Image (cartoon, rainbow, N blue to C red; front, top):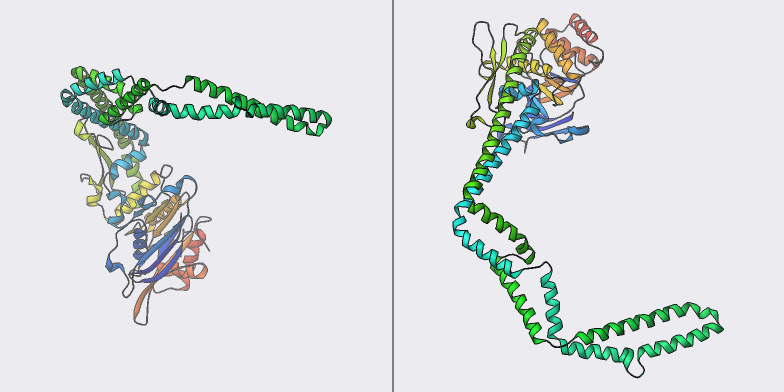
Length: 520
């Protein structure tokens, strides 16, 4: 929901802050007072491009800021998805590309069939990309064939193993320093177990003495276990060192073999620009590429069949979507036409025209179809594209009819209407107001209106006025409540000749508004 709109230095607005509320919000004022400047500010908020002429004379910059409050899953909408402008032509969502198609799909609840078509189309495009890759690979296969066979032989002969480099590095270090390792392990054994005053002998004597002492004083018992464990650990180290020394011997031939293996691995990793693990994984990939290349005809045929199958699936999904669109068009055209009658367009006709065929060039992102929303304002005339012949007021009322039809399906929480009451009055104005009020039960509506019977239905009413002070013209936007609202409605009823009679009529409009619709 739009909670607040702040405007600074925009055209004739020096500063305005408007606190909107839920339901129906109306903007009223005399002709030329500047009501459209509020709509212009909202357009800027949702992405409309601004020009330097928009800046108030003498101002540094024009600013339009809006505060929105979201609930639940609605928190990710932005820009044009936040609101829809229904007024002057450049703000009409009905004038956007594919508007007829998207509107028909929403009315017919066809978003899911359209999603399935889009997935099928994406699968077709993916299969085509894979076919191009296969063709490119097969085109270069003759040049790669000998290279791949040679790589296969080399890697088969090398019999590489995961982790081999680390193991060979350790073997090389041990064989290269065998003499020094034998000397150092011998010194360790001498001090542990073989020389005079060896550590194991000393630990054994110490353990025996402490055992005797503990027999006399049990307080020494806790120290026996650590001492015994030290002796056991030292004995295990001595045995391990003795075994290591027995196996250790200088072996130039073994060292040469290890270094040769390391050189082979280094050469292969440099040559093929892959590590050992990557070379191991490459082996089955090479085999698959050779098999595919040697059976080029079969490989190409399989890729082409995948494309053909994906194409058939896409076109079938598109044809199914097209049938659903034609059925929806047949159902909704008459419904919308009937909805136009109370809005002062009783002799007009709306219809969706769906055209298309299942061919490759028509497989576009939204389907195989072209969908036009066509409008015939008068009987006996052929319908034409709505955006070419409808006036601003007619477009707004057509959109109002659509929004009423889409009430339960529409996901837009904020609707902004301008010119929706252009050139109407009486029963038509009452019908427009009723539909605005109906929409306002589930979403927020901001409406610029000239009609008091519509303004009286609003939960919040704002008056736009133009004043001159100090030789400068300014536009102000103020909420009106109580007697101020009565006065504004009376002005809308009678112009400058406000009388007690028109004030009474204004109060009757407010009192006759549905419960909860109007602030008193």
